[in-house]
Image 1 (cartoon, rainbow, N blue to C red):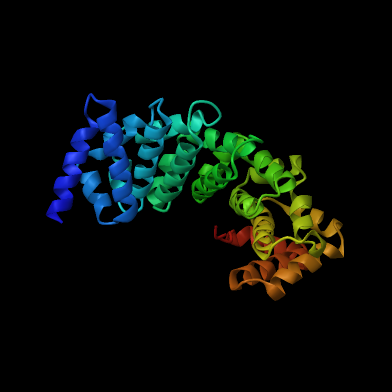
Image 2: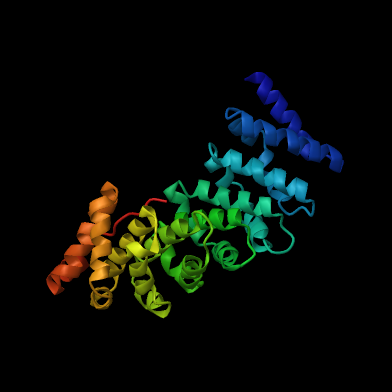
Length: 315
């Protein structure tokens, strides 16, 4: 362990070198260490690497930016506190995300979004990161951009999911245009896993009072019910996310959602029943709750409104 500490201190010292080649070599070695040796991650953080890595995220060198972003991602797995206590780290990550279409390398964008997702595992950081509107805006812009690499979109969606887990962040997401961007992905993006991830975020955002109006603007209830139709070929995960979103809309919105579902005919109920019969334990539970509201009328809707127990959705 002492050897690892000495090696970490030496490499971190080299990060402050005036020689670009020396800095680049140190970054490459630190990246390998943090990738292959989990024990080295907190050691490297304790050696003072994070401020240097943060600064390197602003580098015009894609190789250096890539290495720094990868190291931070690896460190975030075991040293979240060290990252979040470093002043300016979120601003540096925001810089990478904000320039996703211009100066930032795609890999650095992906690693930075994945780092946010890793940090958001700790629920105490969700309000902090969610309050950084520039980060939230940039993540939404990544999923909106048609030419964003699939990996960038998936990592951005995972970060948005973590942000949406904190209820007070959902209004911010809606205000910055997340609903339209997410439903656009569902309707237009056929890449593997994208629809699953997008509907998971949609289900979380549905759990706030402002969601019903925004969903109405994009015919969100119709889209969600269509996803439940066996003819669409949606995966079980997508169907369960759709049920979770509808149930959250009912719990936080109003009877208008129930009315829309009923107006879509027996196919809507059949889709919910399919989740009840073939879904996971959580999916079945959500499906049963939604069926009670849809088939039970006003009484069951009043019960849902009074209990306000929003179903969780796993990413």
